[in-house]
Length: 160
Image (tube, rainbow, N blue to C red):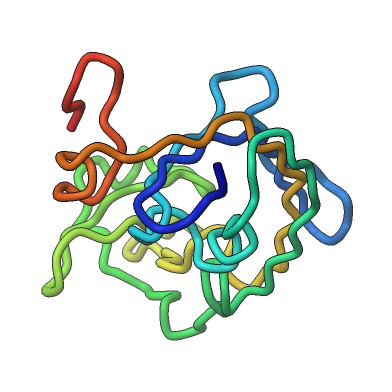
């Protein structure tokens, strides 16, 4: 069975950057499982998964435009510290969720000053070319419920 829209695919991967540094891996965990065609994984990876089947092993190089986008300097902001709870306890590198006019946004703390906190709302992998070493472990038909909900459901049924 090949991976195509409305199929559930499971795969192991090791993600590295162009410097060869490993970013993350599922090799010692459960494989990643997703509903193909529902945009549940980055577009560049989903494209190269199309037509693959169980046992396929391959490398996918995904450019930023097909992954987490290019870095946008406008996403680096200086925010008055009065808008943060426990601002004096924040540390550079910490990841927070902040409330904006457009809803919650995940940010990385860059610098903690006395009166301001510098944050970066870019995805940590924005602007990077990503290298995936992939092994397809399973492919099955999605259930009607999974298709209707747009994502995989666990072995115990709906797990939202």
